[in-house]
Length: 55
Length: 271
Image (tube, rainbow over all chains, first blue to last red; front, top):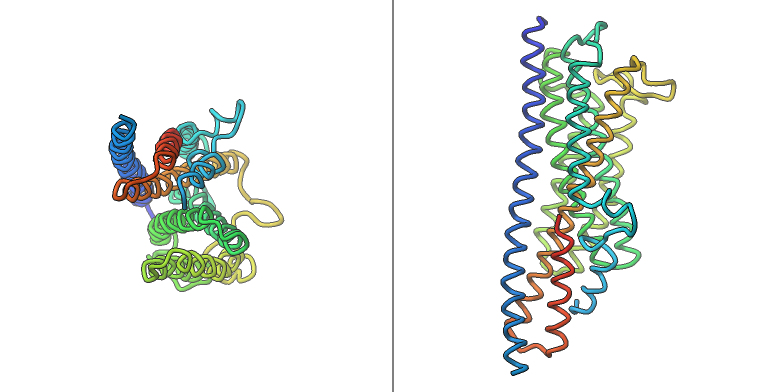
């Protein structure tokens, strides 16, 4: 196999790994951030209810 | 699970599991991602600018090895974590271990996909074929299919404790394939896949071994960081469900206050 061909295979393998890793990280971070926002919203609603009950 | 239970849990493990002292900063999820990223970038640079090109059989395509092998090892480590979590769940019936097992299998499968993808490309470059039915590749494919079935099993069972028990038992049984995969190249040397590190050494030049170890450390840290992010996500999901349930009915003020405190604790654990 020529060096040029080998370089293509190596680039393909590393490209695949890097794309999968970055996509995974971005998706995981995104859905965690989304849940964290939802959690904050729900907590605020609960806190409002607690304050209302106190009053 | 009550808000009190979850508050106590948050102080024991999962996203709230923050070790005391100087280790806290080093092993926080954000730090783990940074350390893993730094090691993997260093490993990548070492692989192309420090480690010599293999002159025996594979030539330049051997460079794939520096990420391919550590990803494979990390996948097997993830399956081992799922095995341990399964055993612990069956002994203690604690849902934290069910979450840990599911997160480990999910990441193990992800790493397995990368191993199969990069392995097929390397196989084409080194052996001239995309796939060969030889011991290492076949046993690894069986592991992938087994662990994919793990999720089919989880999705097909609605009741939580039953799902956790079935998953734990399945993770323990599926793990039987992992040592077979690992030792396939050692006990069945007739296959195409080489055994790089054996009892008699690695057979690699020192710069190659150093590069491999840097990549190995980076990939293992990345697995740990992703595992912590998955656990944080699972804890958040449970917390959100709990708050939704509380808002649907009229909770006791103490219970609502405990849930608010617990949600603060969970949120602090997000990477």
